[in-house]
Length: 147
Image 1 (cartoon, rainbow, N blue to C red):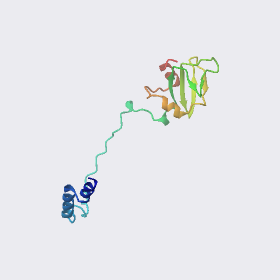
Image 2 (cartoon, rainbow, N blue to C red):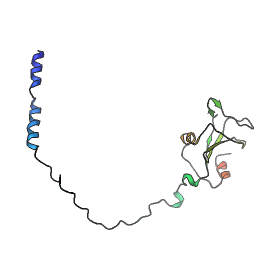
Image 3 (tube, rainbow, N blue to C red):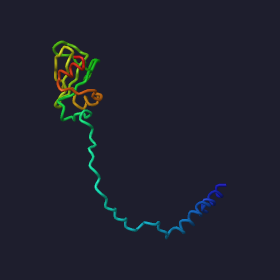
Image 4 (tube, rainbow, N blue to C red):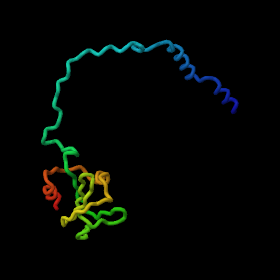
């Protein structure tokens, strides 16, 4: 039985034979357009310049136009296995996390601020959502976030 299977495998199948015939007929055929240089594009009139920028009231300031960003953090903040607490009043939740000039600051509900060296701007960017508003002053932003 195994010899018969091996013997059949030596002979090409019908599909293989048909493919070989087709390949032999098409060997010297070249599709039209192959080997011919592409035609030069026709010169056209320059496109009209259109102002496609958003209107000023819909534009969002870029990162170099803003002094900083802040986000609320209601739950306790655990960093390196320790819970962050305010150095002045001991508050450990309801933070505002401020990112400015490559530094991260924590602000408690009482208004005390402290530099947090265990957080970097990459951490801030991972955990912050999209900005819902921009403000001209720090105090306006604090009022918006309820501090």
